[in-house]
Image (cartoon, rainbow, N blue to C red; front, side):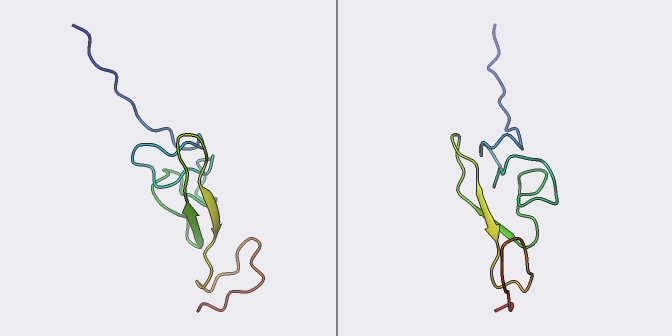
Length: 76
């Protein structure tokens, strides 16, 4: 008797599936989405992502950290 396939998500493939919260296309913790695709790196927020498009990650405004393209971030 054949067994069913067991499918798992692949973090870093730019496809947000399974238990992934985000997938920005790599597995680095110094990136926007963490190396396990289970959360955001401090200072970033990621939205969206699906089986056909990667998550969009932007600096988190209002956290008091000047990141990436932010010109200012007063922390409020």
